[in-house]
Image (cartoon, rainbow, N blue to C red; front, side, top):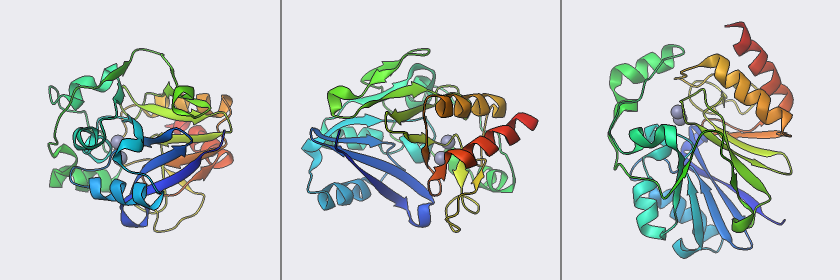
Length: 237
Ligand SMILES: [Zn+2]
Ligand SMILES: [Zn+2]
């Protein structure tokens, strides 16, 4: 498998990331950023020598606005199907409010400002993953799969490639505050987290399945060692 990972900086300094995975068959997008940030994805596609038609799949890891907010627009522009887990469908359809459990002052600050509750263009997915379903990514040119990794939210999903590259979105973050002001191999909890023990379980599962390098929604990539330490810390909570 030849492919290329391209981080899409939705916000600078790794504050909010999406990822484009370029393959011989086009590209797969992991997360869509906030509403109105489709230009960031367009820019990266262009830099990779691709256009909207080359985008073949849009994976929305969970229903929070900074990951799902751009999905409707990106689907309209590219025609690519959107995949989410069944447990997030009602949030992405705007039929239910997400439970936001702050993990510290950043979460409480964002919550007070109402930012995580910002409405976005809601959507119904084209592909729905149920329970512990996996989605094989080989038809899209990637040796890997989408797996169920709940905890941050009830229907969080991650991408795990056979070579150990893992895209776990908000299972954990790195750097200072929301993003990667300090791009060091230092994990931290995201500002909101529903079930820390479930997150620990999900991270351990990804490690067991061969996860070696962890790409996150906020911050810079983390090593398996750092993720292991973080999971152990969550277990103590
Ligand atoms: Zn989130
Ligand atoms: Zn997030």
